[in-house]
Image (cartoon, rainbow, N blue to C red; front, side):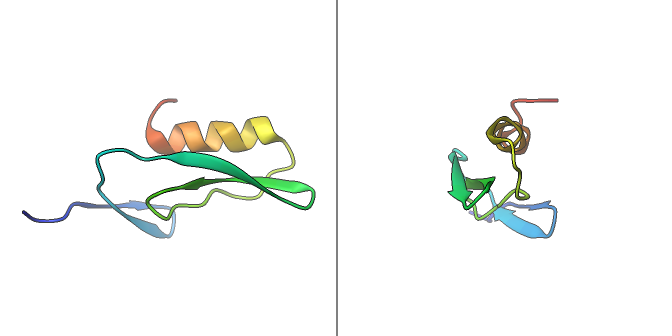
Length: 61
């Protein structure tokens, strides 16, 4: 069974059954992180980090 890969920004994701995203806070910033290794940009607004995560999983747009 061949592995499927996709590129998100400069991170290569290995296809998985499900992407699990979380938000992580570091100081004044928050960013989205996924079980595939993807990490979104640092944001000041938690809502924007959640939007980044949703866009990564394909739930938005």
